[in-house]
Image 1 (cartoon, rainbow, N blue to C red):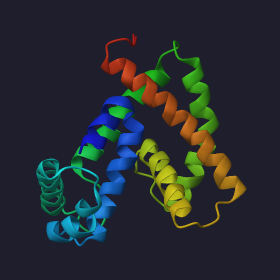
Image 2 (image 1 turned 180 degrees about the vertical axis):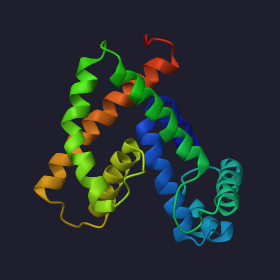
Image 3 (image 1 turned 90 degrees about the horizontal axis):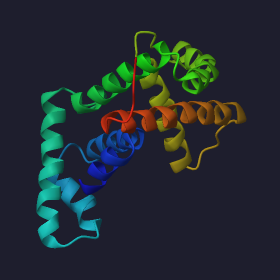
Image 4 (image 1 turned 90 degrees about the vertical axis):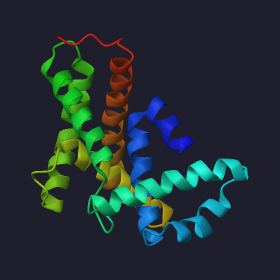
Length: 181
């Protein structure tokens, strides 16, 4: 809960990846708060009084996942909203002549995005969601100690650079420091 809020305040891209991990962790525990308490909360290095709000946070997420029909796959509406907000900012940055470095990063990443969308057969999916799925997928492969090809490494590095820039612009925009046309 604290980690999610800190990431949301600091880096929206890292926040989204973290929240996708949380969704998967909840699924791995059968969307069951008792299992979450035994397998996850018991390992948290926090006091007993801190565990109460943390348990409530996980319980709320579990309920949201059930209500939104994403208990087995998909993402919570709150996470989709992050993609929507980032996509809106992404479009504004691309349509402005003030951000040539962002446009350049996007056009470097675009061939990889197109290739990933073709492979995944998700052409209606927002481009940024494809980007996040690529980063998340590689992160999962690394956690499983599976090999990542050189081509995939290059693609992910390019995509990560784009998302890093976008996250920085998002932060500046949130603080009122970004002047969009």
